[in-house]
Structures are given as structure tokens and as C-alpha cells.
Length: 562
Image 1 (cartoon, helix red, strand yellow):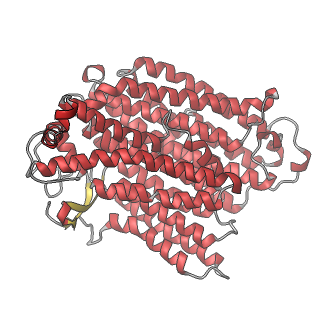
Image 2 (tube, one colour):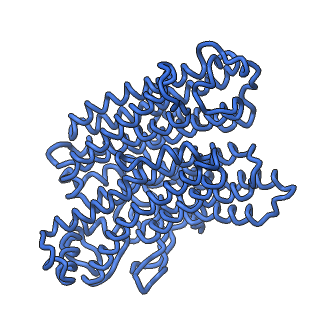
Image 3 (spheres, rainbow, N blue to C red):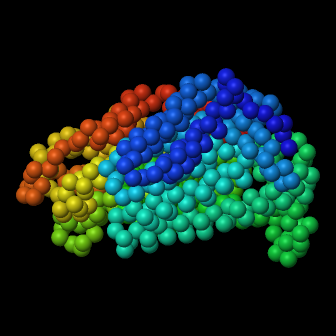
């Protein structure tokens, strides 16, 4: 067990406050009687959700990359470390670095935006807002936890508010229950493998002298670095434990074989959350059936947990396995890119050709999310590829690109889902065939949706381009064939978005839609922060890159032999 301490600025545990203020808000919102207090619930939840955003901005401004606190080697800052379940050697341990901080900022921004987007909700608003705030707590906890046990609690508990938000407030009663159950079962089943893998790590380290689930310590063991009370690298510790247990005698196999099994179990859990092909089939149903604010958070942040965990767990704890599997992971990434873009393109073009009935606006955006998360997977695969295939700078560029892509996609997709919901509120439908010619009736909505669409397809000058450019530049050295083929996805996704936009805003107008109202002040308030950041990060991404780069270099240095 490490020494108990809190790294506080001004005597305040900022990370704990950031995590648990939304939980306090969830409890207060749930406990205040709902009758005659709808406005209090809405504005109270919004104000409470702004507090974590303020803390996140303070942490980002004062974050010191590369510092070392009380013997913690890495680039973590604001570390909080307290004994928790001492009999198992489990600590309450939090910390922030350049991988977590961009996603923390994204989470704390999208939560108040999603709450503002829900102001027109009439059905049980207090319960809805409580679950949104609870979801924020679980997301922030997963991004900031430095003990795997604590991380896993937040990872799993995030399923609970997500399930009830989809199940109780989804679009159609007959389909939302199926979508919620599918989402819950897929992600819960996937997590079983990760639980098994890290239980083996704990038992193996305990057999060697001191059981640990500390992510920093497991990372050091995996890379052959010393850890107090333990000797030997993680692969040998696992093999020695399984040998003593008799597993090796029955199954045979070398030490790398057993680490490969644990790698596969962990990868599946994270791939399900990131919605990597072929583990993606829960996503279209969940996104399509969720109410608009929940779609914004699911697409904007929840799937990013998978990408974050790959950077936090897969790359540093399974470096040899990442090198061996890089080509396979790149192939899965390519399939995600192409399948997501192709299905989105097919949905957008089908009504033009008079074929079929599948023309749901939210499904186009959902499948494009699979496409964009494929780019993130491609960058992660390239960052972990065999040492001869990429230098340190290319790997760091790929990691930076993955982080910028996750932030840019979170902003643009949240905006697109909100605009889709706004169109449905006005027209009563998400079907593309119900629209047409709305550019003249809704000029402001058409203009802002154009900005969000171009950001999503990666137009230069907007944040999506920065992420995609860095991913392709970083992945080219390690996975040139997959990277070249992935560029086909850029064309297909652009076609899907342009066809979608054309069906909604051009052509003859549907007569019943001529008198629709344009954007309200509330809708402007939701969209302006998202689109302003997409433009700002597209023109000047340096602040975001500066946050991430030091950690990205530290993360990939092992692979480059530095």
C-alpha cells in the first residue's frame, strides 16, 4: 500500500469534487418533490452541472504535465490517494493526465449542454435529470480513476443510468426496451472478460508478494520497471501463478500465450464499448431509440470510454500483445470505418432510389459514429505496432489524433443528434422522406447543421479535420495499407452526410412544413458552444494538443525502444 495523501491545490480535493458534485446534484434533484418544481429541477440541475465544468477548466489551466508526486512516476497531476479496502490492497486513487483531461473537459461540457437540451421534457423531468447527473459522475470517475477496481466500478455503474434513460424515455415503447436491454447485455457481457483478466493480475501479484490493481504499478510491471514489494515482469508473474495453480500443467503453453488470452479478454470488453466492428450492433439501436439528450451523451462521451481504456490499459499493460495484434486490430478498425460509412451512405441514398423503407435520420448519424470510432481504433493499433514499423513521433501523433478525434466527434455528433431531435420535434418524424426544402423555412437550423455536418466529415478549418489528419499521418508509418484503404471511408461518410443534408434542406418543400419555427434561444444556447469549439479547435488546436502531447509521448516511448 502506498502512502495516503491528497495532492490538493488550496487544500481542496478537486478531482473528488468534480466526480461527486454531480452525484450530490442527482440526489438533490431526485429528492425535491416534482410537483410545481419543474423549473427548479431544470435550472438547479443545470447550475450543478456547471460546477464540474468550472473545476475541469481550472484543472486544465493549472495542469502540470510530467510532474512526479510522492514517488508516482508518470505524467499524472492532482493525484489523490487514500486507503480503501485494505485487506485486498485496494486504494481510492485518482489522477489526471493528458489522456484523461480532454475527455474530462468533453464530459463536463456535454452534460450541461444535454441538460439544457432536455428543458422541454415533460415526462418525469426530475428522474431524468437525476440519471443524467449520475451518468456524469460515472463517466468522470472512469476517466480519473488510477486503481482498476475503482475504474471498474464506475465503468459498470455507468450502465445503470444509461439503461434506464433509454428504457424509460426512448422514442418508441415497443423498441426502446429492446434497445436498452441489448446495450446493457452487450456491454455487461463484454466486461466479464476484463474482470477475469484483472482478477488474474491481482492474484498473480499477491502470490508474488503484494496484490495490486494499481494501474500505474501494473503498467510499470508490464514494462519491466521496479515496483515496491514486487519483482519480475507482469508476464512472468502471471505465468508463475498459473503454473502454481496447475493450469499450465493441464493446458501447456508459454508465458506469452496466457498474456495473449488476458489481452483478448480485455480487448473485447473495450471494443464493445468503442463499438468496433463486429462488436458494434448494440450502437444503432441504442443511439436511435435514445431521447435526444441521451443520444448526445452516448455518442459524445460513453463510447469514448472504450477508446480511453484502450489507451490507459491495453497499450501500456499489454505492449507485446499490442505489437503482435496491430495488423489484426488495424483490420477491425478498417472494417468499422468502411461498414459504418457504407451503411450510413446506403440509408441516406435509399429514398432517392425508391428502395426499401430504412431512412431514419438518427441511424445515419449512428452508423457514422461507428465509422469515426474506427479511425480511433486505427490510431491506437498504429501506436502499438511492432517497433520497426513506426518511430516515436509517429506513434505520439497517432495518439494525439485519436484524442482530438474523440473530442471533435463528441462535439459534432452531439450537435447533429440535437439538430435531428429539433427537426423531429417540429415535423413529428425522423424519416428522411418526411423532409425536403427546409433551407428556406429554417435558415438558421440549416446553417448550423451545415457547420456540424462539415465538422463531422472533416472539412479543413474544423476540428474533425485535425483529428483525422493526425490519425492518418501517425498511422501511415505502421499500417500503410490499412491507412490507405481507410481513406475510402472519408469519401463514403462525406457522401452520406451530403445526401442526408440534401434530403432535408433542398428540393421541393413538404407543404405541411412551410410554417415551421426556426431555432429558439434555448436551441441556440445548446448549439453555439459546440460549434464554436469545433471552429476554434479546427483553427487553433494547440491548447488541446499541448494537454495531450506529453502523456502521448510517455505512453508510446516504450514501443519505440526509447
